[in-house]
Image 1 (cartoon, rainbow, N blue to C red):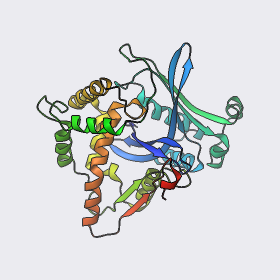
Image 2 (cartoon, helix red, strand yellow):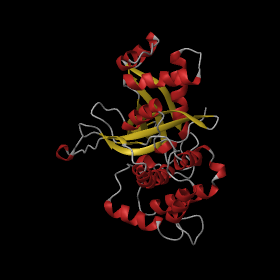
Image 3 (cartoon, helix red, strand yellow):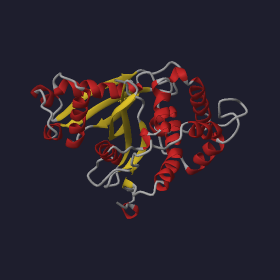
Length: 321
């Protein structure tokens, strides 16, 4: 089984807490066998005389544990549940092990409240609960500092002015495959080559945000699509192409060059993408660009569109379910 780099989205919980959404896909023999949506947070911590950025992926929901166990059944895994879950979660973290755009010392931790884990049907070794005072640590991955890395620093949100500057850059010659082309042209070409549409007969399922129970709507949409024979954006040709950019980077050297160009441009202006992931930023731009055509294709079918959407803000007066 292979796991591409997840889609990263800045999210907000119902109480206004800012988080990062992680949208994972799992492939076997070139086919998607499962999807998972969860959220996490990050912080800077002084470790051994240096700054370490710690990313926490939160698996502390019973429904999330049940989803992991369903994937075990889908894969036909015959080992014990706890070993499977730990191995799968470790694999989810390891997608960042060889990231070419890692900056600084980074640590990824997959954690969960043991009560939610047990509620989800996963039995835990007693010592695992006691060792972390009620928290379960499924996996822990450290990505060492690169020799050419910049000093670790905070990752504030990109300002509106920086967004405009980045938009201009990505539409200008030099940001694309050749010095004469732009990333915007590359994206337009790829959308034509890999249209964000589903095969005939499949129902379209749309999603955005995190619901009132802190469940990532990507997870709900994926579960619904699987149970009804429908599909989400990730099931389209464009979705599979974006995943392949991560699974087979050697087959897309031009994309890696654009990632390097983006990193150079942003570093020169003191800007950092979400979680410091430059490649994920370009991926997300591609996912976002595919949403419009995906919905248009759904509407043209003349059938109802199923959508799971919540929009919250860190300003309670602006939040809306």
